[in-house]
Image 1 (cartoon, one colour):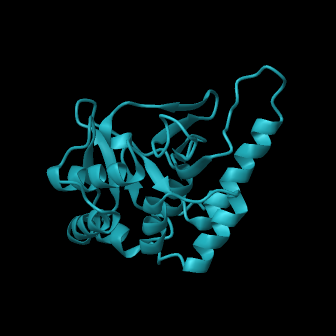
Image 2: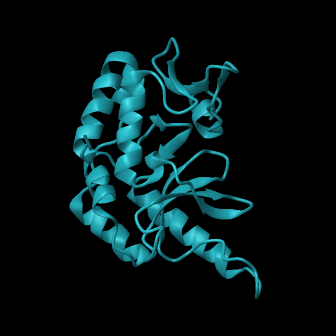
Image 3: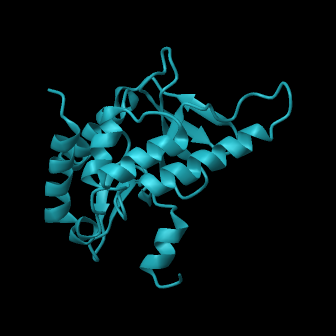
Length: 203
């Protein structure tokens, strides 16, 4: 059965509270309705209802990484990153493949210059989560967890409670921080250098 955004957050918070208390304690406060409206005005595009609902629950994800290693943007970073992508796209030469579409709304980043976005472009990609690679631009997967922001959030909740999300499993360190790892390789999938620097006192 499909979960609403609030139901998915309830499940995520339940798991974090019990298993990763440091991450749970750092979840951001809700974005105010005026902040959400201002962000939509700033990008010139209405946000999908699932994004509005998520921002109204938490204005970003703080130190909580969604699988495999993405941190959700809050309202300010959505606006900042959207305009940065638009400026970069406008510098591209004639005949070059578009790097960013005006109706793509950035929603998360991996700490390495790559991001996730939700498409509001009319057509088959509408509402889907896309992956934006810094060197190649945007692309879409046919996998069900990327069908919408709500599907991604729900799959995260199920992955936490079930102990597996695709090829990754949730792993909590001794300080209560959550990462996602590939069991077959034993490699922790966390390359957010800013977060790592903050955790270990270098920034």
